[in-house]
Length: 512
Image (cartoon, rainbow, N blue to C red):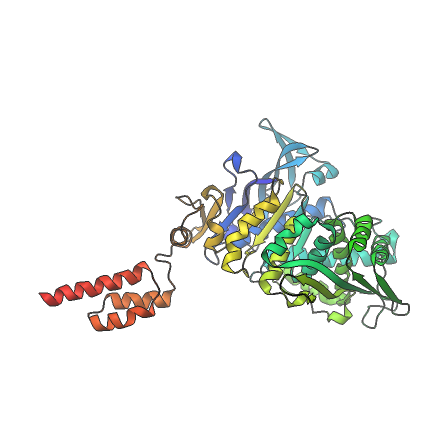
């Protein structure tokens, strides 16, 4: 997949993007390269990801989902992208320049043919739209959170009254949001069903070698469950739970509270069982993900409705009330790992923030390996140490290989920027007339950090303000002894060199 152009005529609450019109991938041989969006905070790069998520959320809800078939966005837009369908590359143009439903066209030989059939439109939308934010900017999560609420509600209605809903099972959504709660599911799915050769990336970088054991608890009629009968399941979810039971090393079922406890000691037999019942890592993840979304049913429906209304009207990132861990319908417990530095099992929750983020980002890229995927990654390396940041693109390209996926990455890190060629870098600048976007005027790939900070953020020299201010004050000083006394306080830099030069100037003046 490859997004070629996005034009925003009216952006609803995304004020910075009014009039936005940008082409991407100007060079055909960039096809498989991720795109890097850089710029200072508030320059609009994260809003671009948010707009893309909302556009495809609305398209998914309209053409391929269990949700309300109205077109749920105020954004007026045009978008063009390339995507493979049935082995053929298709050029898609979608236009919604006034309120109402969008028009969808297939472009071939400069000819536009409108596609009106909903099933045909569904087939040429991105396979998945994967969102991730490091947590500093959670607006990206709004359409995903709305989807989760709708999913849980639909499951409840389907289980209680199948005749009242359209689908006999809940269709898979295209939208998946990666947050802390998805972390363990990604880890478990990969370490159960990916090849050992794929998993070497984790042992090589974060020293995690094996998944040793874990527990899954599913509770449907416990004390905190809603209604007199608790959570009712669809046939699809019942099948998932039955298959989890068949894969378990041992299990327990409490009949009155309908609580399942599944324990897994991971060995070759465990992996073979999961392979038989769930086929691959992403299908296992999808099953766990769907059961986990039932946790939303533990929140009062009135609270969810009020939150959704405020999200829609004001684009507020309102989180629902937190469900206590012991009240959740689905949860993991006692996830134990084998790491290089210890013979004893280590608890998953003891990993650092950076290790969790590494598993989440690269685990999702490993697991979701279909073509036609759109990844929207807002600062995916924020918790990485400098060494891991310097490896980010190497690992990403190793996992991506030749998959036809479109990846947008926002970052403030010169470590990331130095692994992107300038034609795939978009610098966002906020001006009096709105957002200005441009490619760097010089090559960024392999450039020094000094140059990259100047190119992307107009920082020259690349020193923190406090130390730079102190050095520049000394550069103007006439007290040679004071300058010499304070020089050892500073690390090596061109600015420090000028202090030595200043001492020489003052010495020459004394001779005159």
